[in-house]
Length: 308
Image (cartoon, rainbow, N blue to C red; front, top):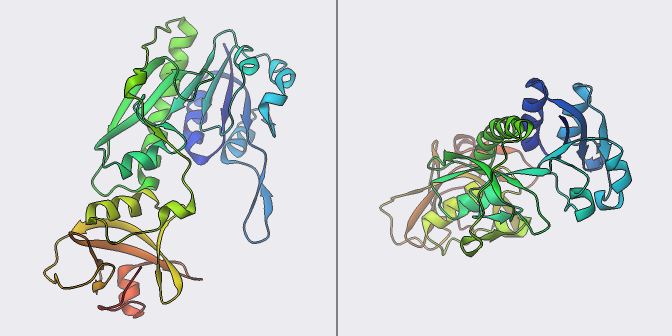
């Protein structure tokens, strides 16, 4: 069985590696075109491209895959497995593969169909999430499900931490899926469309913190945006990024929303609607990410300061 793998970010590297290390015949990797990174805007290949090249797997970078049907067909694969590829596939692309196109999606479908399932699970306060392998259809993330793998979301877990956990889970899932597809054991389960929820692509603007919300809501927003695009607020006319947060109790109830109640080695305590949030790390304009102890020692924030 010849497999073509389509994926782009770091999240998709472990699944690709699992197929290669598992002895499957990965004949090509399809990924996004190189993107400019850093201050010099150096064109840089995606993590999937780098992984494939290191393993000796041919790499294809299509500006728009829907315009490259013949190129994909000429790869000669039996099945396509996708994971965070980042482009919508046309019916012509789907029709190329006799064993189908299968996608690893980082949610318990039909919950959180769309571009930001990991962040959305944290924002919603979910205690469990997972990876679903589904057959790809034209409608977004609506295909029949081949298998589901679940994992818990730890209290205070950040987007970066949960992504790492789900990437490993996706690696297990695609390996199991490949084995089932190769055996022809592809009995699937229909998604319940009536229970479907959707999530959009996260932008920097989505990370603006509103301290008039509950401490739980503020903490979930900060964690869902950590490390990128990063939750932020304003302080003295400059942006401050906030990381690793948890709700906390604090005795000073006369503080106003967004007021710094205390700065200690274990966190910056900030007043919210129904209590406080403890922020473990922050990044000030032009600086690097700092732990609360460094912020305390550098006197960058003090009790009584107002964040908005």
